[in-house]
Image (cartoon, rainbow, N blue to C red):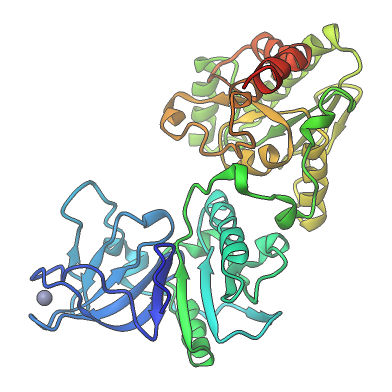
Length: 413
Ligand SMILES: [Zn+2]
């Protein structure tokens, strides 16, 4: 089988480059692969102590946190070093779900050697980030068919060139826990192939190498047009994580939510902040086109903006939003997976970064540049940033761009 650190062997040999969690003997015997859902695991048997156990394979968001449990009683084995979430102890893993999801196997190219990219996850951003891994395998290993396991709502993002896609009618929240139904489907496919690998599904693929057009079919903003294209700014809003004017406003909003009240004030205040930012920018650049996207009701921000917010998501809406990002020099939003596609298509961004997200900084930004332009094009502001602060950065991104570009991209060795 192929020896490559980006490939985890599953068939005919099953990855076993680790020690038995009970006695430490290296290289337990692989029995079978098990796709639990977002985790891909495998069953093993130790040739020395006889322990039968299941172990998480080193892929996806638990790549460095392999957990194992004894097959007989689910006794967990945690890694010796570092903190790890003991997910096998959760009820959703203790008792596997058995429902069979409606799944469609779409074959574009028949391959006997495949690599499975399991993008199933209960978090939107995680699915997206894992899916971007497809490009590496498509470009560097054309002789091995890429098989993407994908939730239905992400199918539109599967790039051309994959050998197969296994499309699951599974909601994000259903992707949490151990789903036997998913595993059953995978087992039924197993004999079709001679050689099977698992893709690593790295959580933070190198974005400067990702060609987003291959995923969304929308051409991203071309930096060469930055000064010539009509000035455009898109606000990316969400209702579950808001841009608040103050810590007090955030507190009140949280209390409302706890009490089960419809937390409309938070979204209303956010609309006010956006409206004030727009007014500030217009003072300097009256010609800027403004667009607002996100899950939410339209209206309330003011005249002369393109309001693309909706409560009903579908593929058409996803594409329309991507086209809005792609014509924007700047996208503006609060930190989160909601910023991945906007920054994949726009030239730059201004992001409001909540205090509790400092450790996740830039993880949601599809950084498109590998030089000093990064610092110019991606601006991060405090949790309770004032509209004047956001506007000041955006005005600078229009006003100072050309000089900055020439100084840092042209007049250098
Ligand atoms: Zn052992």
